[in-house]
Image (tube, rainbow, N blue to C red):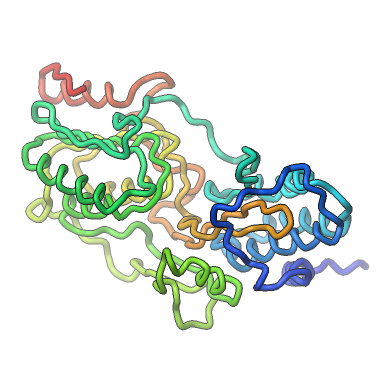
Length: 373
């Protein structure tokens, strides 16, 4: 009888051709030409570094089931054992199935500068329910009649001045508004820092974004944390022998109940969402779900929040492909969140603009046809 190797034995085999010092931050490095020739030995080294990131750095690995792990590891074993001279693009194609079957909307392997790469193939289609009213701006805040309108198209790369201007604008507008439309459509994340003050002000309390948050804690993961200290500082440095280890825990205490007396806003809120809303954009949704007088309008959000905080952009050593993984695992307040996201209270059909639907809802409630565009 042939002995079936354990997952740990397969992992150890794949890791033997690389070491912690092979984990290098990608930065702005472009991938080498897709036609770059790799030797069989270089292919095995690339696969081993890829496996090291996946097994020891990626936040999702400890939480994926054994069947999925074996499927992924078998793909890597086949590439490793049958390694031969090939191009970078050929290697990408061979690694592609290992990424495609992972139910994670963040993880990716890309040839930066060559418009080639792979993400999960489990992503759902995105019906068109209109674009964010902020257009090509990061945000827009305005008041039309008694309707306050906040459009947040992205949370990437806000400057301190933009954060300050955004806060000043919504603080000035909110006291004058009786109804609020928050447009998150197309918001694929970034940093939730610009929105934390907004959601906490509206709710009167800072609600956590997840029940529990885990991070990896082993020599490889901790080496990657050091690569990004300029971005994260030492906030992920935890003294523990556990891997993964709990970083934040909101499960021990009951969530606070909404208190209208403490809330900064008490009117009707319409939240506009679509299939491109994910990551930090979905954090806003998670927090605003605690507001009792809110309706989500549009279509399901992306469902890209469980395996988040993508600071690990690791360079594969010979092709210069960038392997990007989430470094934080979030145990959400709802089950089966990844790939599914949040459902709207009012679903829009493909081609129906969620903003127009929100205005119609407002008009129906107030007995008037008021345009806020």
